[in-house]
Amino acid sequence: MRLTFHLTPVEWWQAADPAEPLGAPSLAREGFIHCTDGAAAMVATANRHYRDDPRGFLILSVDLDRVGSPWTVEDAAGIYPHVVGPIAREAIVAVVAAPRASDGAFLSFTD
Image 1 (cartoon, helix red, strand yellow):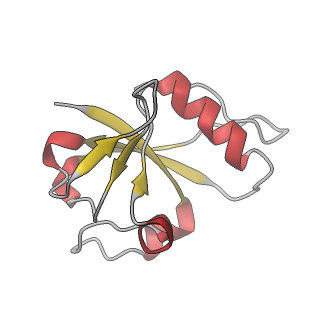
Image 2 (image 1 turned 60 degrees about the vertical axis):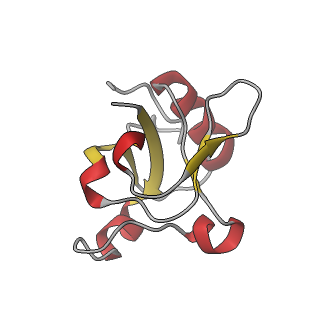
């Protein structure tokens, strides 16, 4: 198993068809779905991009070995996989609410 994480707004997850592979707005916009390796890096990424966004978010644990689409890692640190297509539902091995502080900061979670 090659585990990574994907952050998604709760309402987007709830609106997605559970019978279909999971896409993301970034797939149409940028050509890939953003992921992050490691719980600490996921929290840092969430705080960098979404701290001021009041929506609820979910953290999806994704097995890259089962996504059903090609994926690459292009950053020098090697912690930001890009899934170049939809994610097969069977690759999503866990879904947890992203914990947040009262000021909007994302908090650590158990991976």
